[in-house]
Image (tube, rainbow, N blue to C red; front, side):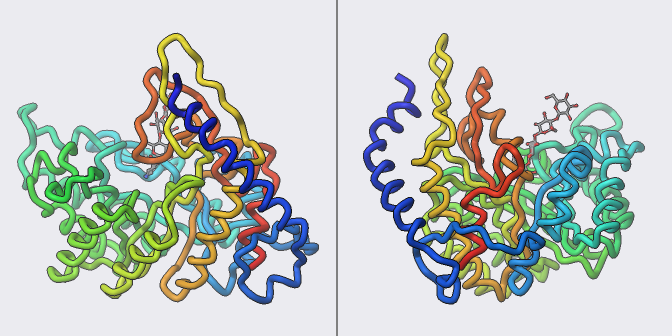
Length: 396
Ligand code: G3I
């Protein structure tokens, strides 16, 4: 039996009770409740249709969204109205922008930068070093054998100077290093070892180097370490250890990106607060860089020959998503002094990167063969309309 469906049936009565209680409480809410922070979500739409997320949160932090060279055309009106920060979802990654040693693909990245500048939208750079969507050529020497550490460092420096240099003064932040910490529950394995970076260096030297090169190239850009599942206790401690080391070594790091690929069931508020407190204790800023909240609490398990049934965006999961979006934004507001931006990963439920991997979240196993199940993880629905969760985060 499909574990995902089984869990749904097991949880059904609990979800139904939550939905009824939450829906009942919504109907009793009025906009007047926004004066104090209530634990009950208020999903009443505000009357002023001219405002977007960036306006509702203007005293708190930038509101951002991941975009592509396509979405800045197809969803431009929504992006311009709602957001004041953008991140290129893929178009600035090393393997995409620099696919061969002497070849750069500037077109899509340039289009995104031009779009943002035209509409006075801030731009996050993403990213300069990752184990995925990288450039294989960086790790191959002239003789076809693995490149030396020295050659890889020289290529990394050239890459960072070229890309950061091209957009110098245009990016307010760069995700310099992405996901270098091991994602397992094993506290003794600190760094991600299934990475060409680790294979080449066997030490965090490449992490420090990337930050130093980025700082050389644009001393005014804020430099971030970006990671997922950062709130899980074991991984949180590994990240904290890395950050302490970077600070002790005077590496020019300014902040930490919490990717925030979450679900309607996790993480809990205490885990988020604890992770924030640790980062802030080191004098670092925070951004939530890739926020989404899939309605699937457990990954889809594929049974050969059977197509998993997608129950869709049911009232049950809607109520849970509303409550959790409110919970996390209440925390964001409490910590706003330390948070520069909150960025959603994709524009609307019409198209999320999670859909094509079975609707599960980051770190979940990807169904094989691939299964398309919608995740409904964002604040705008499949028709680009504001969901109730939108109003639950706006009204506080
Ligand atoms: O552009 C090619 C296209 O030419 C080709 O025909 C097609 C066939 O599969 O693939 C297209 O590339 C895909 C690309 O997205 C653009 O759509 C890749 O296969 C696909 O793997 C890639 O996925 C991206 C993923 O990073 C790669 O790991 C997602 O869009 C992107 O949302 C996701 O973003 C990452 C963040 O950068 C870092 N944090 C995690 C997050 C989710 O993995």
